[in-house]
Image (cartoon, rainbow, N blue to C red; front, side, top):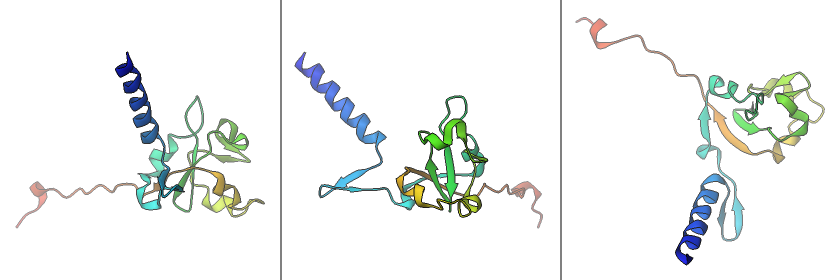
Length: 126
């Protein structure tokens, strides 16, 4: 019985640590750097539109932020802007500018869509 309780605590700790992106070093929280964020293309980002229970993400200056629980982004929309998109150009014109971003979790970084290379070994002739 004691073994099962300890196992539950260990499993909980492992899951909790893996789900959090904050690492503690010398008793201070260290937020993830941009280099450790997950890369997402615009196509990937579009899936996080905040509708039908999906999470809501927006990109600003190539950083992707979660706005799922932000009241102003209810149902994935805020003042004509839609979750799942890059709002960099629009946020600079907003009265609040980029200030609200400081309170949001960074969940990824925007990367270019992969390009298709149509050249294959079979088509190359000497």
